[in-house]
Length: 269
Image (tube, rainbow, N blue to C red):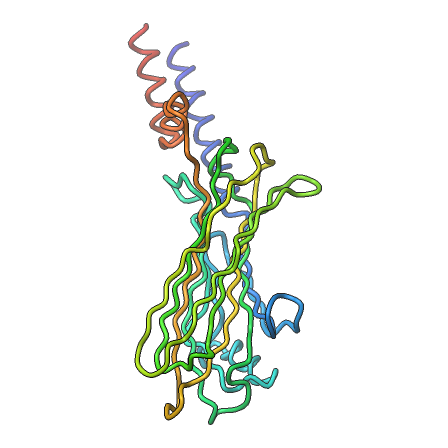
């Protein structure tokens, strides 16, 4: 009978792991590029991804869709070498919620209009369940922009939004951090996106949205300017000491927890 109990527990574990695997890939990230500052302008381009990444099409082999869309919206001076988002949703061992935008952009006024015109990139994903709805969760962010030969009028602004599944939803917003271009040569700009405490009790799952607004133009005498961007969001938890044991267990891979219980049963027998 004890062997049967162990078999049933193992089968239940296998079923649970299969269900968790399916759930962890149920959500998809989305990437949208808007004309202008914010999300009120025309949609230039949109792309769906999977649970952990979304990538805009920027190569000739895949139709060069994003850059063709920029041309169609009178922004032919802009050309993305890469643009996408990543998250840690459902990854084994993850204890914090993470979402990021990254990309590279070149501006060349000789290729068309739009140099210096603002565009806004938005990456969003639902379905985050970590941290597991504890009090004291902190929502924070940070941005980095690496400019080459970009005018001092060039800028990037990174913001972030946290929102839970309640109706109406609880939400928290990180103030935008504006990073300016620096003239001739290469200039690296970095800035914290601030931090805020999310509501003390919220409804899982929650969503994260990273937003970066870009305006890029070359400095005088330079034909082109380049830019690489990163906008990173993080939801983490500061835990009082009495809760540390609970978090240690929840952070352990589930199979290890179950195997430990099985060993205790055998020892007791």
